Structure formats: C-alpha cells, structure tokens
Image 1 (cartoon, rainbow, N blue to C red):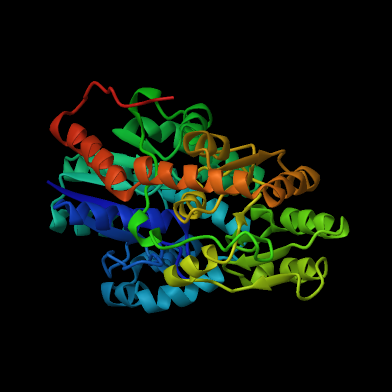
Image 2: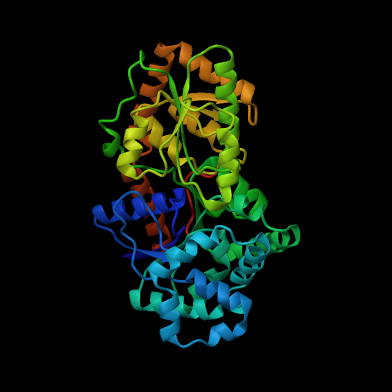
Length: 433
C-alpha cells in the first residue's frame, strides 16, 4: 500500500509540523512502508535528513500569482515549473512570512474553494502528479486544504485523510470577514475527508467544536521523536550557573517577553540566573527582539541563533530548565518532548496542549498563562530544588522513551491508514475526545 503524505512546507524556517511530518515519513519507510512525502506551497525544512520529494505542489509563487490575476492560470507548463523551483520558493519564503493578512485571507478562501477557486490549475496539477504515483490513500497537511478532499477522492478513488495542525492560530490572524468565511468553508468540507489525525486531545476538541470535524472520524496519534538521538544528552551539573532556556521562533506569540520579565524579576531579587535563547529570528520580529534585549543587561542572556539538530543537542546540554511560555494555545509542543527526551524539565503555561503533555510525562511544572510573576515563582522552585528538578527530568525522559517515540507514532498512523484503505466507512475504535 502506497500513501502520499502532503506536507505544508515552511520554506526558509524550521517548522514543528515539518519536523513531525518528515520524522513520521522517515520512520514509516524504515519500517518498510511505502510513503511519499510531497511538499505543498514551500519546500519543507527539517533539522534531520530530509526525505521529502524535490517537487513542490501548489507552489507558493504560482498560488500567489493566480490569486492576483486569472491570467497567471494560463501560463505554460515550462514557466510553471520554473516558478515551482525549490530554490526560488525558498527565497520567496523569506518574503511570504511578511505577507499581509488581507492577502493570506483571500488566498486561504480561494484554496478552500478547490476547483472553484483561483488555484484550480494547481489542483489539476496535483491530481496529475498523484495519478502517476498511484496512492492507496492521500493524507492532507491541514484543514486549509480540506476543500480539495472531494475532488481528490473523485479523481483518484482513494480515501483522503487530514492531519490537524494548529489551524486556529493562523485563522485567528486573518481579517474578521475572511476568517469567518474560511471557517465556514472548512466546516462545509469536513464531511468530504474520510478521517482526521490529531496530535493531542486538546486540539482534537478544538477541531470538533470550532471546525465541525466529526468526532467519530477523529484519531488521536501523539507526536513522536527519535529518542535515540537524545540518548547522550544530559543537563549541566547542579553547581553550574543556573540557566533557563528558550527554544522557539523569536516572536510575541511564543512569549519570550514573559520569560524575559520573569528572569528580570528573579535577578531583581538578587538571584543569579542566565537566559539562553535559540530560534529563528525573522526580519519582521527584529524590533520585538531589540526591545527585549533592553530588558536584560548584557551578560545575563545568550542568543545562540537558529540551531540545527546538533546545535539543539548542545543547547539542551547547556540549560537546567526549558520554558516557552506561549501567548497562544499551542496545539502540539514538539519542543517539550525534545527537552524531556534530553532530561531537561520544563515550565509551561497551563493552557493548550501543555497540561496534557505534562500530565502524560510528569516532566515539569505549569504556571498561570501570561503571568510573568507566577512563571518566575515556578522557575525559582526548580532553581532552589535540584532534587525535584532531577526527578522531573528523569520522569519526563522515561515517559517520552516509552510513549512518545517516532516508532509508536508511525505504527499508530499506519494502523489508521490500513483501516481506511481497507474499508470505505469503517467503524472506529481509536481514542477520541
């Protein structure tokens, strides 16, 4: 059985969904499964070996131009192919992160309209590509593409599933009218997808309540990571200067300002603490970063830039605790599993997927959301109690090794694929919210 897994690439930046999708495809292949990982919109970027195909479907440049004018839907195939070049798309990806919400809103609506949208040419190209691959099942990357489920099923005659991936965060940034229309289109199209895969109970509930995803077709498959690569990673000794780490994109949504405020409060109390920051810094977020640097004197924080996998391991080996106090409600939180796999406990806000992940792993503490004072209190608790810190780190590492491995993620995903590939309307007994 061949599965074509469509992955929405982030182009020039690391993306949690891309990391998960690439790891899933790589592990399925290692288990002897026939999986094709096909990027959409932009090439994927991962800090592990990239197993995706070089071709990009629904290339971001073509999608954008066709949204601007129907004339671009008449371009010859040679021009289309040139515009879909991965090199060109990666360069365009730096611009795409700064695209106006108004443009993204109309484009999202258009893609959700499928064969009735401005990107109908891209849909036909995708169908031709999939027809040559002859899949037994197609997996869409997120709900923003659920509008093409019906034409894919009609053209290919195979089940179409959809992975859930924090769509609410993207949609909430669109203009109100565009957001409302996009959500209506998603709700209308969910009946056309055969099944849905959610990474957490939290987001499964969001998808069911906000997007009308049928609960009877929701499958909970926890994220998984390659735990073996974290095997030799250990936190610094207890007598080293206490260091709190942040590993995520540097932006307001991820809450780095809250962590800076918490560290400043701890320093004001006369305690010695360092902040180590790593992650992508996009051009539009530089003013935010410059303002944050003024909150902490030089020498009290370190910025390690964007890190690859080896750099990530070094980063975890240099910190005692990790905190990414997001302002928004995180649907996944892959970086939490990575920190715990390295034996590093976490302090996270008590919203989104974090309560669920920490209950499942026992690897950290929850603080009040958007509350730098409570965040500082929790950090101090772990700073002053090295025995507790070590216990949480061990518990988290053991739980991830047992319950959040890439092998388990792949096995569970393939079981769902087999269920749908073998029966048109299966009775489901997988966990649902």
